Length: 205
Image 1 (cartoon, rainbow, N blue to C red):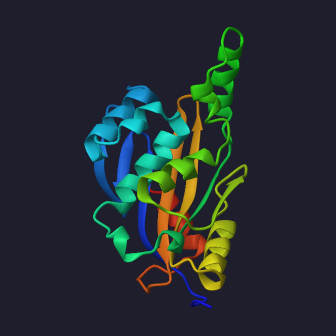
Image 2 (tube, rainbow, N blue to C red):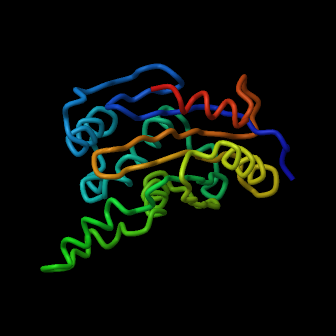
């Protein structure tokens, strides 16, 4: 069994057309830009070499971008694929894409959109990108539940082969969006994994 303590080793918040990493503003765009334009510009800023990004729905793009920024400059080869898990949540599930898919059904159902009518697909896109094969769970709740997130992630690190976990909130509905993603592990840092510390990071916008 691993340590029963867990720690926050990094964080990314994307909201209001800003990208913050570990509390510091990395990049921002004109807030009058629509969500698709913002996501494309952020992709160009932080990656720009993953063509499959353009086929994703907005929820997957947002979560994928947060993971891309969070894991930048981290040596993933130091971990086995099954040693990294994912624990995400949101309010609207995949409703943003569901509505768009329903509109296509009136004429020709879009298989490209149908792929994304499950909220956990964002975890699949992140896992494919980074080669993760660890345990993963997606919760749907009215608000960001820091108590659940911290307790569940700590339990995963203590009772499974996981050595680190990406956890957080990834929400998209129409033009409204926000994500707060955290990398947690049982390697001691200055920030223990607590509900209070998660909420403090989540509020940085």
